[in-house]
Length: 289
Ligand SMILES: NC(=O)C1=CN([C@@H]2O[C@H](COP(=O)(O)OP(=O)(O)OC[C@H]3O[C@@H](n4cnc5c(N)ncnc54)[C@H](OP(=O)(O)O)[C@@H]3O)[C@@H](O)[C@H]2O)C=CC1
Ligand SMILES: O=CCCC(=O)O
Image (cartoon, rainbow, N blue to C red; front, top):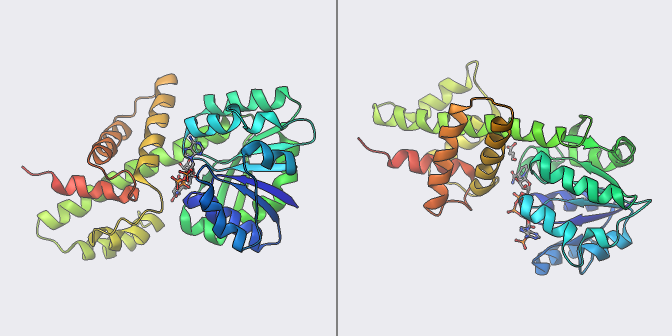
């Protein structure tokens, strides 16, 4: 199957590589075109623009940083809209808000093209090993057509109904995750400041009812202040912002998420946005009496 792939950041590179390794023909595009070269070594073709990729491929996947990027790649000159149409499908796997997704969906479907939003749960390593959780919504026919690709990219795919539901599910999940990361960081700092060994805390947490892969996977690196990016903090803050907006629209009070967002904003303002979102630990560590 020939698949187009737009956006070769941390996630897009791993996902497109996975498709190539599993026998898909892949045509890639990235805003910084030089990032395509590594994929070419593994058999990918390059499209010079998003429009060129869509022209060549029946299915095109996008994995872009944020709503502005997702809209730009579709609506700007040489964008997806110039070549999408009947018989072609566009799958946006970026994490965006439901409004952005709906705007893209309306534009694509008005040309006769099919649209699916399919944000993912799981980070760099699950992307490399095909263990993502895919949260799809939109065109059911396109979803069914995409299952061979989703089976390579993920361990489980959900079809959640109308466009917007995938984006909402993803934002709820990441809102919980961002709040957990803040509580975890506060716990690590509190254990250290109160004279405990934080490594003992990691062991205790891992044996109890709140054990989870995030604490287990990131805890030891955090204690060494190693925040090599798997999920960049600037994207986590974007997701908190979008989740809080969803909370505003639905009159849901979210004081815990709002406080977590403030910590991520502070971390961004201190230049930590490109590090892993675990770097929020550093700003909580700095807080003194
Ligand atoms: N990393 C993770 O663990 C996860 C991330 N996500 C989500 O997936 C998406 C991608 O994340 P990730 O790969 O980590 O992000 P990166 O920051 O590594 O990559 C972002 C990508 O978006 C491109 N981009 C940014 N702005 C524009 C623009 N204006 N026009 C065109 N392209 C643009 C970048 O191009 P360039 O190379 O030129 O800068 C790059 O290809 C985000 O929505 C994120 O929230 C979802 C699950 C997990
Ligand atoms: O959006 C990023 C999700 C990261 C994760 O699920 O570990």
